[in-house]
Amino acid sequence: FTNPHGLPDSNHYTTAYDMALITREAMKNETFRKIFATRTYQIPPTNIQKETRYLRNHHRFVLRQEYRYDDCIGGKTGYTSQAKFTLVSVAKRGDLELICVIMKDDSTSHQYTDTKALFDYGFDNFSIYPINELENPGMLEASPMFTRFNPLLSKTESPIITDENGYLVLPNSASFEDAVKNISFSPAPEDKEGNNIIGKISYTYMGKYVGGANILLNNVEKLTLETKKLNIDNPTKDPKDASGSKPIGHLYPIVLGIIGGIFILILGLYYIFVERPRLKRRRAYYKKRANRRMHNDEFRDL
Image 1 (cartoon, rainbow, N blue to C red):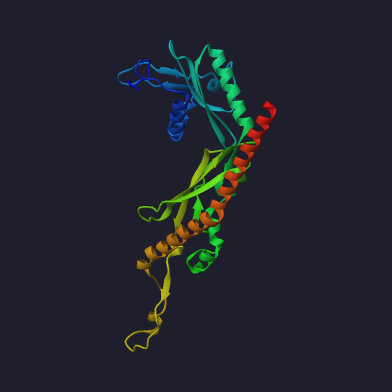
Image 2 (image 1 turned 60 degrees about the vertical axis):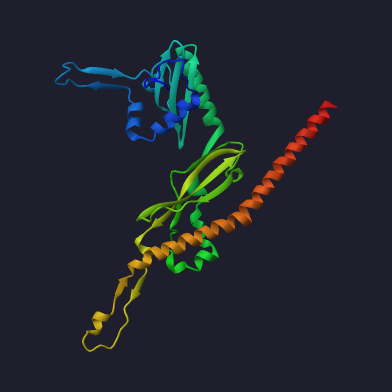
C-alpha cells in the first residue's frame, strides 16, 4: 500500500489472499470481533457534538436482511470504481472458521451469492481436527526414557502438552493419519512458571501446510524436589525440630534441564526411527503413483 486508506493508486495493489491474511490476524482480537459483528451502534452526544450519531453495518449477512447466511459472524463491504464490489466475510460452523474474500464483482447481489457458494463449498468439503485431542506429545511420558525418571514426572499428568488452540484442516477425502507430521524443538529463552513453548508440531498434506500447534512444557510446583533433613543426635536441638521437608530450590533448573534434554533425545530418536522411514515410504508411494499415472497416459496416447 502507498496510502493508509487503501483507495486506488497506480503504485499499489492487493489480492484476496492479502485481505484474508489481514482479516485472520484481526480476528485474533476480541474487540475487533465484537465490532466486526455489530449491526448498529449509537454514539451519544458529547461536549462537542450535541447530536446522537447512528452507525449501521452495511454487510447484508450481518444485518440478516435480504441476503442471509446464518453462520456469518462478521464482515466488511467495499466499493470503488476500479475495485468494483468487494466483500470480506467470516463464517463459523462448529470449530471451523472460514474467511471469504470477494473482489471486483459486478453487482451487490452477486458478491453475496458468490460468498455463500464459497462458504458452502468450504464447510461441505473440509473438516477440522483438534491436535491436542488426537495426538498429544504428552504421551512421550510412556517412553522408557521418561519412565526411568518417573520420580520427576506426574504419574497421572504429563508436563508436556500441545496448545489447545492448535488445529489442522483437511479435505473430507483425507484422514488425520494422512497428514505428514514434523516436530521441531526450540527451547524457551527462560523457564517461567506455567506453560513454556519448547517446540512446534506441524502438519502438511500433499505438500501444503494444513495446521500445527505449539508444544508446551508446564512448569508446576509439583516438579520441585523435596528432601528430608537428617536426624542427628544433637543435645542442643530438639529431635522434633530436625524432621520435616524442605524444598531444594536450586535443583529446580536442573530438573527442568534434565527433562528438556530427555525430550530433545526422544524427538531425535522418534524422527530417525519413525518419521524418516515413514516419509521415505510416503515419497516412494507418491512417486510410484505418479509413474503409474504417466504410464497410463502413455497407454492412452497409443
